Image (cartoon, rainbow, N blue to C red):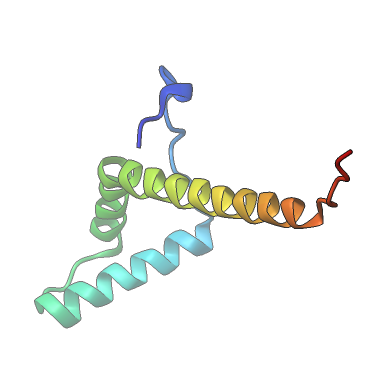
Length: 93
C-alpha cells in the first residue's frame, strides 16, 4: 500500500511509559530465559527493545495504519449500502 500523502514525513520515535517499558523488559528477559536458556540483564533487554522498535517498529506501524484504513473503508462501504437502502423510489411520468 503506497503512502503518497505522507511523502517526506518521518514516523515519530516510539515512546512507552515506564510501566510499559518495564513490562516489555520483563517479557524479553523471560523469553531469553525460557526459550534460549540465556539470562540477560534489564539493560540488555531494554537495548534490544529500543533496537527492535527503531528497526522493526515501522513495519508494525505501517501494518496498523493499513488495518485502520481497511476498517475505515469497510465502514464507509457499509454506510454507503445503508444510505442506498434508505433511498425512496421515484415516480416516473
